[in-house]
Each structure stands twice: as C-alpha cells, then as structure tokens.
Length: 305
Ligand SMILES: Nc1ncnc2c1ncn2[C@@H]1O[C@H](COP(=O)(O)OP(=O)(O)OP(=O)(O)O)[C@@H](O)[C@H]1O
Image (cartoon, rainbow, N blue to C red; front, side, top):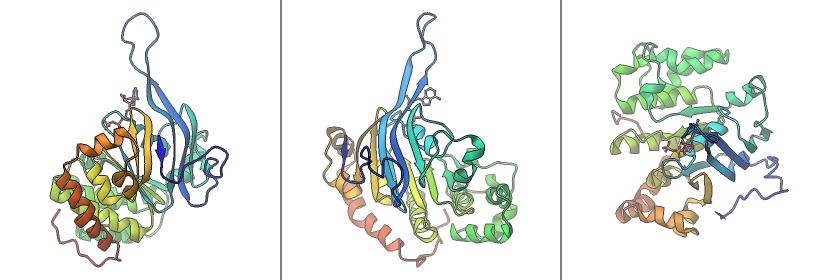
C-alpha cells in the first residue's frame, strides 16, 4: 500500500481523528459480511469487503475512491455515511468517532452528510413533487425558509424554480441528477458523498454534471467524496484519490501523484486500461476546464441536461 501524503500513522493526531484539517479519518477499518451459506455443512463463508483500510480525507478536498466492481467502494461510503458500522477500526467525522455511536447520537453527524446516488429515478420518490423532494431534508431538520432555499438551490443546479410543482418522471436523467444534487446541497452539508453519481449518464451530460459538482464544491464549500469505477471521471473532478482493490487500500495521494507516478502495479494496470487519448485529454483540457469552473459562478447552465 502506498500513501503519498496524509497518511494516518498510528499514534499521530490524524489516526486519533484530532487533525483539524481532516473531514474524515478512516482508521484501520475492516468490514466483514457473512455471505449466504454455500452448503448445508460448515460455517457461512466470510466476505472481507474492507480489510484494514486507513485514509484521511482533508477538509474541502474532492476525494476520489476508485476501484473495480466489488472492491469495497460502496461499503466504505456506507460506513462514512453512518449507514453501516465497521467490524473493527474507527470512522471519524469532523473529529467525532462515529463507529460506536447510537442512532440518536449519530443525528448531528448525519445532518452534516448528504448523499447523491447513481440512479436518480430510484432515489427520487415518484409520487412527490420536486419542491417536496428537494425540501424534504430541510423539513426533517425543522429548518425555516424552506421554499426560498429550495428555489435557490434549484437555480444553483441550473433548474428554474418553476419545476417545483412537477414530478420526477417529467425530467431527463441529467435533470433528475441535478434535482438529486439540489436536494443534497439544500441543507448545506459539510460532506457530500457521491456514489457513482454520473455512471448512468451519457458522456456529454456526465461532463456537465461533473462540472456542476466541481463548481458547487467551491461555492458551497463542502468536502466531496466521489466514488467511481471510472478513473477518468475521478480525474476530472477530484484532487485526491484512493485506489481500492478487493477491500484493500492499494494507494492514495494527489491525482498528480497517483496518476502521474503510480507506485503500485495494480494502479499501473488500472491506469493502463484507460485509453491514452482519454487520459491525455483529461489531464490537459478537462482539468483546465475544471480549474476555470472554480472561478466563482462565471459560467451559465444553459445545457439542457
Ligand atoms: N450486505 C452484504 N452482505 C454480503 N456481502 C456484501 C454485502 N455488502 C457488500 N458485500 C460484498 O462486499 C464486497 C464489496 O462490495 P461493495 O458493494 O462495497 O463493492 P463496490 O466496489 O461498491 O462494487 P460495485 O461497484 O459493484 O458496487 C463484494 O464482494 C460484495 O459482494
């Protein structure tokens, strides 16, 4: 396993979650599942979804988690979102070890986290109007001024406030993902977790949604954890990356470190599978575009996505 920097070494403040610049500390985390019994005899086999993973997500970073199917990405996101608990190790959010908290104790942390999933149709209630969907997390938190905030976040994601009275099926996949993002940013989360958030979208719409997330991370000032099996997607939107393989952390560092000089054979193989042209374009033009997008709200969103 290779760490280029931000390594949570044992006994340091980072491993104890005390580092003030860490949004998330994953400290020697393992998660095992008992899989279905394969025969009537003998114990059910254990799946090691995550094995002794340690990493630090710096505050305000755009942190990519990349790996093939089954590498443990979703398991890790679920642990960070406090939807699951590690079998061992600690998950520290903003200095609080959440691994052992009760549901009630978790509430303040959950308020600080929002998720965007791959399938917006699955995550948007088809019977609710867009205004209710986007406002729901605010309602749950007992916030005031919900209608104004909903209109504001819809505008931020490039949707007119007039869509509030419509239903999810009336929108395209890209527009639905914009609505999911509006819902996620409405309560002003400190951490946004995006799990394969653009994987179901076609290439043009995908680029627009990535640019939107990039702009929002700057304007709304949240830490973004972006999970994808696609290295070029991670490269477009993230500044740091962790590579997972079969539940183990292979390598972590800045995008330039890991993509520019991968230290591990597995990372080299993964990078080798990305077409050279795509990589070249991503590193030159697209990263430049993302950088330009970090300039406060210069661009418009007349993309129709
Ligand atoms: N609830 C569960 N019960 C049993 N095994 C599980 C459970 N959740 C995950 N696993 C197993 O843990 C491993 C990691 O799964 P995980 O979904 O985290 O991977 P992933 O990298 O997100 O994959 P994908 O990209 O296909 O979603 C897999 O072998 C999976 O089958």
